[in-house]
Image (cartoon, rainbow, N blue to C red; front, top):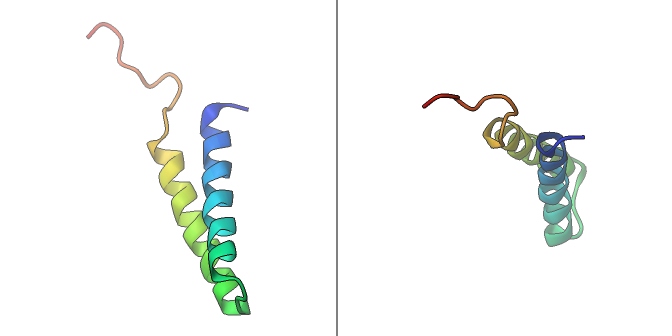
Length: 59
């Protein structure tokens, strides 16, 4: 697996599990909110992390 996939999965888990840990006793609706926040963070990480082959050569 490359850095982009590992970083995206790690970001998702860090956000979701971190929120679950901080809140403690959470409800059903809060669980899906955590998944939504985690998905948003993972999408940001996916598009912000280095894309292999996207470097400009010759500049």
